[in-house]
Image (cartoon, rainbow over all chains, first blue to last red):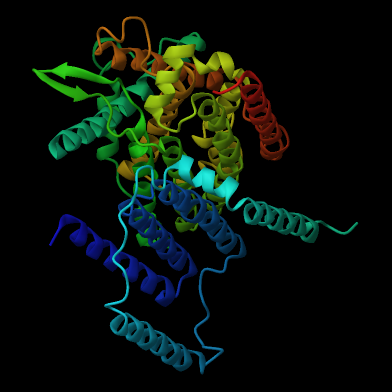
Length: 167
Length: 332
């Protein structure tokens, strides 16, 4: 076993445990914290894959900005405790069934195609560096990038208008 | 090789631990001088052992946990506050490389090409400790303080992140070492980015919850804000995080805007690098203490209005002008 594989297994266990903790805990603040742990673990995965820029963006945007807003809303609304009784009793069996179907599908594809999938290519020089990502983002994907920014702007203006008091 | 990293990391943490203790003394001494007092002068020669006495006092204090508190998060919050403050300095270089007992060692922990982004990442997760401390205490003052500080830190993080863009644009790299190299070549970035430097300084005062932005702990409204319910060593950890963040942002300010470890003869005698950096950090800390002694606390709505309506547009304008000038002059 290489060092990288050991590291991967530990991180994968942490990520899965954090995801389970997020779904299963009855306190929404704990759920949010588990989700942050999950995001940070994913960021470390990116680091292991030589994508330092993505890792830092993941921490800044997801683990930092977005989850702070989640926590902020939970605390302001005082919605820490999820009420005990289940409003949708059929939800749990259905979720288990669908999850099982997804697992079987993935497993089937992985096993049946194991010979066909090419091995992962090695990362080239400057892969995932801020310069490389910037060049791709502002040349090849310029239009989607700008459209995304406009969508975000519209969402922001919408939030401002919705929260404005009617005089 | 891995041992070299471990030793340097341990050294860095030790510097932060001792540094924190002596920054508190430094602050008390400078404040006392600015208020025409003498300051602590009883413990040890001219008060030099005061931090040790304070530490011993805090260890022997009783640790209280409120009955209604969420115990796990109450215990986790001080740790989550201290860790980002301690690892913030990992990307700041103290020099290039220097001979040490016949070996050539590098005087930085990590020279990564996303160093500036690392700082914004750490800054964005350093909010959690404070907000969780406030929430888990189940005390209205603490919760209010925690929520206020979240709102404040999120608002000023934008201006902080945007003030990094100026040095990045001029240097053309996000590596801290690259930024220092460029400053050695063309002069300190504080000369090219005076507005950026000012925005950075104001935003870091808000990020570290220092006066005049010490809103989360405004005594007359919130008793002690998010750390109202903390006592003993857990309180000391919050205190430590605040002062370690001060050291961290001073080091970052020195590196991004004041030439970092750059100074006369630093290329001939590499061990001067850490000394120059130390002097610049001490200067930045002095500015922060001076501001605390001079300015009254800003009211909360003024603070938010200032952050969103003045600081953010100003930093966007600064970036636009910087980018325009770089394009017109040709190359950064």
